[in-house]
Image 1 (cartoon, rainbow, N blue to C red):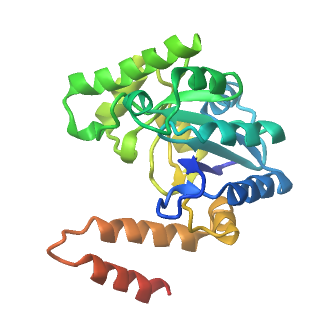
Image 2 (cartoon, helix red, strand yellow):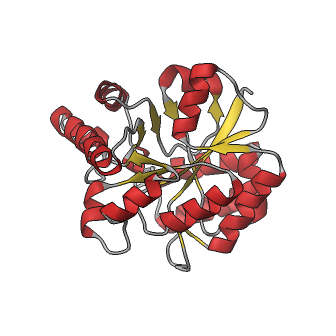
Image 3 (cartoon, rainbow, N blue to C red):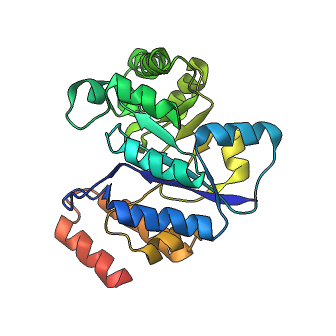
Length: 254
């Protein structure tokens, strides 16, 4: 196996206004399709174990959830029932201070069936803060999780996908072994093994099952569209308005 896809979810539920809140039935359709196609689906921890043994299945995908929503418990139950694993990344301050986020007891319950990973303390852009703050965000969140679950975690998801060499170096020094970003591209195994960084594709509420299949099957047209969209969104606002960017995207890919 040379290439694989890492799928990134956020929450499950019935909130159409949230682009990353996935309908539970749609989530089940996606997961059951993966199983029907013979995919081995695992979280970061199991990837790390496979890396140490260098034993890889022919059809493979990584699955993770970000932020720390209570709906993680339902997602974990669905995955556990069909024998899939995932990594559930949680943000300390959000779990402590926000409604509909996991409590310490729920985190411990989740950790009994799936892996818990760090999504930092306060969800900052790690590339925009001082080195001391990077270390704090990565070390303290890891320690907090390990105190709750009474075990170790070696998996990190960087908020907003913001990452650079300084963030990677600090993460490895703190004790993380695998880092997830939000770069919407597939993964080359040799790159992941050398960099310890996994590209993850965000799964959106609007995606049909056919779109999901294109993501997993590494349909180049899907990935080129996402790459162009990201590029256009980062262009200076003085060059194009949001409406013009949407128009360009529509003309190119309608």
